[in-house]
Amino acid sequence: MEPLLPEDPQVIGAYRLLGRLGAGGMGRVYLGRSAGGRTVAVKAVHPHFALDEQFRARFRREVEAARSVGGAWTAPVLDADPDAAVPWVATGYVAGPSLTEAVLAGGPQPGRTVRALGAGLAEALAAVHALGLVHRDVKPSNVLLTLDGPRLIDFGIARATDGTASLTATGVSVGSPGYMAPEQILGHGVTGAADVFSLGAVLAYAATGEPPFAGDGAAVLLYKVVHEAPALGPGLAGDLRSLAGECLAKDPAARPAPEEVARRLAPEGAGALVGAGWLPGPVVERV
Image (tube, rainbow, N blue to C red; front, side):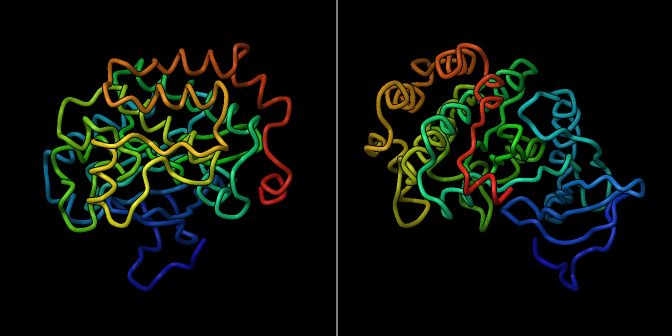
């Protein structure tokens, strides 16, 4: 967490802000606390989105839908105000590093961790898709590692910006180069299969410490995702390798459904893998 800057608000909604958790193309994330003492993550969108009424309408619909997800492997949406001068959404604060932080600090994750991670995320996506939602931005920095299992975060804003943001707008993208599905990059219809592609890329990153599509600059990454086969390192082997490869199929119809991914990784459910101890020692110490 970083301290608040002079230009940051001190309060958003009913939450007093304690510091900055991060920032991206769509907004800033703050650590906040309610009057009752609950700690939350508050994401405020960039002000230019607030000028677009279509964005506000989409944001309102998506936040309401995200509130109903409430799965075991997601951070719950607790509060939001799409009509505020700067729209915002508050989710339960998740105590744990992101997958990006864990890999940068400790390298590739053990097989049992990758398997539990993939099963939990697949179960989360199955719940999201059952509500007619598509996350659209499944990537390592949106996956948090806790003692109780992985958590998929950042609902509500990614889909609301569809049609408002563009891949070429400065500092803005709907999705993240290297983890976006080909059809997402090409502007074709996006379904839950796009999230499965991103899940395959996340699994590859967790197991090898490297993304399956690498390069300098967004344009190179986008080209590789659309036209080249993923680079799956030797750390991704056996059934994990074949499953990740299927998730990364260019054709959305060729990818497995999240329910199938979860079943193949954890026949007894992700909870069984997590309950047996799923994080390596260095990550546990960090949590």
